[in-house]
Image (tube, rainbow, N blue to C red; front, side):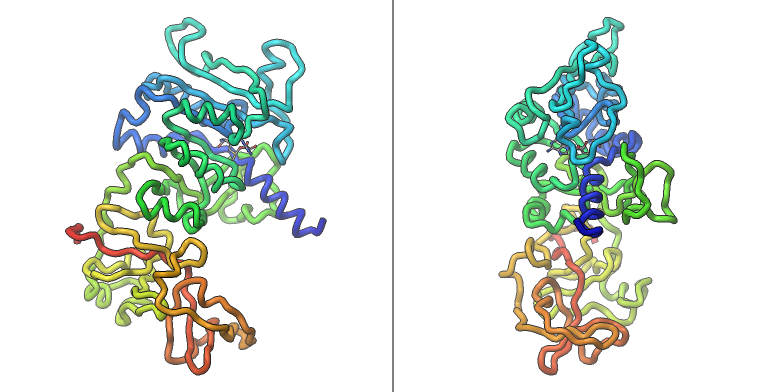
Length: 397
Ligand SMILES: C[S@@+](CC[C@H](N)C(=O)[O-])C[C@H]1O[C@@H](n2cnc3c(N)ncnc32)[C@H](O)[C@@H]1O
């Protein structure tokens, strides 16, 4: 195995073993509860891909069982032998309670639905557990059955299986709140759900990065290690978001925006101030390079950064597409390009086919110090993936 492959495998395995901090779970659940205090009332909550031996999800829902008005809490864990990255079990309920040898090839199910200890409270102490028949894979028939019984699914699923996990929830039509990477927005399996307002995002993480506990020693060689943001014992994961279909107040707060004329006069962005907005060469839309530079009075389609979704208010804007190969609808393109010459910053030229991957701006002259593309005597610049939006009629200006 090459060094690069070994590092990639290590990254992938570690991506699956990130444990969410209690405060991050609490902050997010509070966002739902502030909007609707009965979000979880009378409901069965399933926490799959969990592990009460390590996880704060079970702790949060068990501690707040009465306050949330839960009917039942179920959490399942993945068998230690099935995990790609092996690590010690903090303590094992099996060994502790029966003296039996732990069955490391099997997952476990933990259930909380009544006061077992008789102390008049339903809490962590009342959790009952047993081994599952299989390894606790969320795709197994027995965990699917638990999913079907549940009303709400909450977890931080293995990042490497995010698409599959989201599809697993959607096929059963459950309410959910799960952690994933923002990049998933442009997956062809995920974007249509966002566009149709069937799922949305929330970003309570400071500067968009989450800090997770890992049972595995933090390897400073991995890209998550960042000297400025290093926090002892935690792994920094940039770009994490909550994906959910539970209502929260933040998505109903419209962005405060200026008109196009005011943006051109007063914008704090040099790319907009005195310049205005350019039209794409291959989409019938204007390029808006910053979310806070969206003109409040433009009636056509606008291409905005994908971070717009952190602030997206469906009462204010409508999502009409995404300008990116894969999830994007080719029918929204107004032009397709033949092979191009890519001119790198150092002037090196290569023949490529990249321009069809996303939005493109046609420019009069080669941009100084930036990569550009040539087809005959036409010159182009490629723009990052953009969400295509338009103003909702009757929105707040
Ligand atoms: C990102 S961790 C999160 C753990 C916990 N939910 C938390 O946030 O504290 C995902 C967990 O899912 C487990 N896992 C990996 N593949 C799985 C699968 N196919 N089915 C169920 N769990 C899986 C991993 O071993 C890991 O413990």
